[in-house]
Length: 324
Ligand code: SF4
Image 1 (cartoon, rainbow, N blue to C red):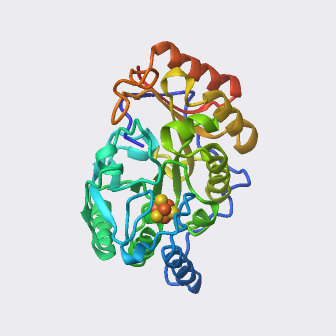
Image 2 (tube, rainbow, N blue to C red):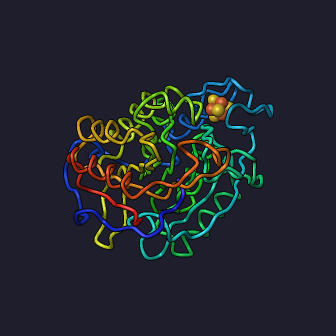
Image 3 (cartoon, helix red, strand yellow):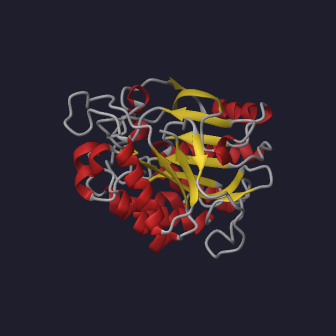
């Protein structure tokens, strides 16, 4: 979920009109009984935590933590205007990025591991986070971009509702590993405008070996379906900025470990050939994989070209590619 460097658009980005998924999208009224009910349900999920697919049952509010190594407090590693995301996310003014600490995946090659797995970050209260969100909007951010948000869903629901109550108007981007429970995602309906979601693996074995999640493909596909149901395909305004929809990120791993063909076939056949895909080449060995026979090297140009060919063969024409 790191920012992208230089990118070239695949065929020209078009504004997508119509289509059934996402057509009924409406922002949730922050002062409605429905909003209060949503928040109550989200908080209850923390008692014996079932926020993410790990279902650890950790008593988060009592300070226990599960696989995500996050307790009851919200921790933020940094926040800023970020210009390195995909063009419709960064736009010209930047994306209002909030990097959250911890992660429910345990990727051995994580490029953000000090933040995701070593606890780098400071405790931030929900009112503090709301202040940050409003400051980012005033600074010209096109959106509020929560990076690795899943394990903090309850606190983030509270922050989004309060920020909307105080007048925040820009879209919320949920920048996720894609390892999400459908039940939890349903709580975000009408609160998240843009899902910027990874599809990391097309097969179970690499998910088990390299992210400690052998159910990743099954869980991830159900999550992508739910995200698409809520927000539909990516909508881009006349300024080239995303207003709503799904944008899938696929980081190509060395040795074919990311299962690109399976991922793209699923998107084309089960979601929509109009799905925007950001095909990422930025993999480099980090964290625990310096000597790994497959993951201990960068991606070759040939491997990236193979993934690009699989994308084209699947009939997915919308999205972005990263420069070599
Ligand atoms: S959010 Fe954390 S504590 Fe809760 S189920 Fe997931 S990994 Fe476990």
